[in-house]
Every structure is written in structure tokens, then in C-alpha cells.
Length: 188
Image (tube, rainbow, N blue to C red; front, side):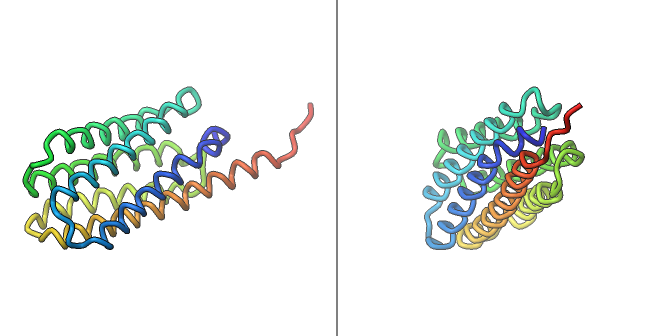
């Protein structure tokens, strides 16, 4: 199982890098229009969903709970596609799409981390990213009146934090894979 996870460490790292890029763009262009925000969010969630599906499918057979990453990915793809289909939705509808995606993704991340706790160290990073996702979604529901600028910065901060956590987790998995390769094989 560790071999499979460590072999695909780059998928988590790439998800993290994409999240950080998305977050930086949200800060660099704070005057972003709602339509641009919709397309950026749709692209991010769609690409993130595709990589989560790849992660879930690649761990099929070696991980009993491969379905958690697969469901997270399918959810991301569905929300991303819906975002492109209805680009003129109001800011409030977009806000609830983002909030629902964040809460559900967070739940799936926590479930996956709990299932992996015996197989990897550092699963707390995945749990922390799940908690951050849920907290982000709840904050969006509690404060729907936040202006476009505030929403842009909140999304940017969340994406950067999420991205950093996934990159750290990816490199921990990569290191674990190298350690496993270096261990001498016992001969019986």
C-alpha cells in the first residue's frame, strides 16, 4: 500500500501546486469579476477532481477505501462542469456551490485519512486539510454577504493553505517510498 501511495505522490503534489497557483491568482487580481471567478473556480475544481479520480483509481486493489478519493474527484468534476454550464449564476449560488464542494470534499478527505492512518505517517495533514475544507465551506454559508473582494481573498487563502498541506503530504509519501525501497529485503 505504501508503495502505491508513494509511487503516486506526484498527484498530490500537483494538486497542491494547482491549488497554490489558483490562490495566488485570486490575490493578484482582487478586482476579478464574478464571471472570471466562476471560470477560475470551475477550472480548478474540474482539474482537482480529475486528479482525485486518478488517485482513487490508481489505488484500487491496494487500498480498501479507494472509493473516497474517487467520490471526491467525481464531486469535483460534477461541480466544475455545473459551474461552466451556468456561468451567469448569481454570486450567492456560486457561493453555495463552493461551500457544498468544500464541505463534502473535506468529509471525504477526513474519511480517506482515517482509513490510511495505519498505512502512512502524517495522515494528520490530510485530516487538517479536510477540516480546513469543512471550515471554509461553513464560513461561506455563515457569511454570504461578504463582498466579491472578500470572497476572492478567502478562496485564495484557502487554496494556498490546502495546496501547501497537500505538497507537504506528497513529499512525505515520496520520502516513505524511498525509505521502503532502501530497506533490505529479508531472505528466508
